[in-house]
Image 1 (cartoon, rainbow, N blue to C red):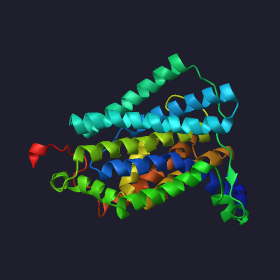
Image 2: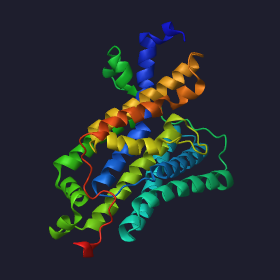
Image 3: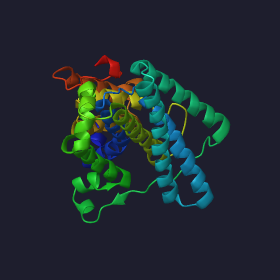
Image 4: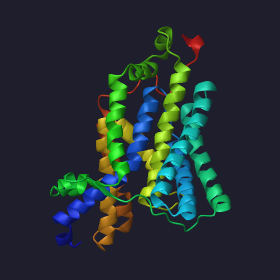
Length: 322
């Protein structure tokens, strides 16, 4: 490997900048899953949710861009469509697990298969956008801050969705731990019977949490297809939904730790792309592809110690069980 090309500031800056961007889809899914699991519902269907959100977002963005020529409007509309597509998948998950009391693990896996089949069918037979690319969002350099050496180039020369996601990490933390609504959500996830006794509507809170969490995952899928890769293909999520679930356990259901976990995955993902681009023959190609996933699994060891798992996670709540 040409290490003299790697051990340079320009390489490190480019690596970290790309790593932050690649972390955003996974981070959005992790934040959404934290919200859902804090209410006691484990949504293992994130891979399918992100696929549906990614296809919905790309289809809307590509169609609008072709019709209007306005890339920015098309991209933001695509992101909104991804949010909505994810919310619909969340509604389906909530109906099955909250109302019908189905097994959450089986339902989540079924949702993945449903999302994979639905997006493959629509993309092949109905949408007709194979080979189409969109322009996505342009980078937005924050005045003055982006002029700082190194830090400015890495943190303040990103697309708007990166800044919004960073803000969302704080919003999620504040909501969960500094608001009455967040307290109610966590109470439902810990002891739904006691929460209902205190006047909370367990089913309604779980519905809202699963729908909101899936909407964020769908947005993450749309960010990948509309803003980053700017195309859609079958299996484009490449396991990011499963990585998001692993990072929820790594983060111990804390939004700030979710940020660090997603950044780890993003930087590892960016690293394998850039090492391949250098034409290195020191490592097998397949090893480079699995590098971000191996590092994520190693990071998951952090979650094997003291756990903060919601006490009622994965357990359907039936009123008669009190």
